[in-house]
Length: 169
View 1 (spheres, rainbow, N blue to C red):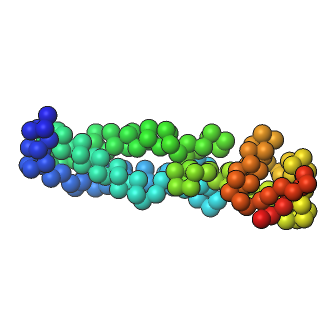
View 2 (spheres, rainbow, N blue to C red):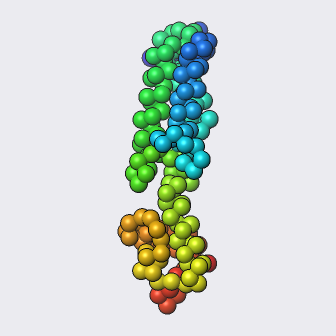
């Protein structure tokens, strides 16, 4: 196996030459950037240019395994499938049902970040509130999500609880 890999590295230098394959990569990138609803404005960015570069490298590696200097559509499709499966494992937001690279980059999804910012805004607006009052003021999310978000904000030092009231740190 090592000899095969060494031979492939020494003799094969695959490139994406066909316009159709480059077009397929572009379609994948643009389609995912738009998200499920087709709008780029406020949706989380599910695919960055870094993932597209990874798809290109994986496609080239797939061609190299075949000892080919030409990347074919099957290589592109294989690479896209691999990246999609990987994203499902680490970047899928179950709340929104969409891919969200923010989960990989920051450890929290866009929906969590938005809800936590709404919690902080509600505390600022009221000037200190109990957990129950915050649950009533936050417009989206289940109560268990809001409680979890409050705990996370407390752990990160963004808010604190004193005498039963939450305040901004």
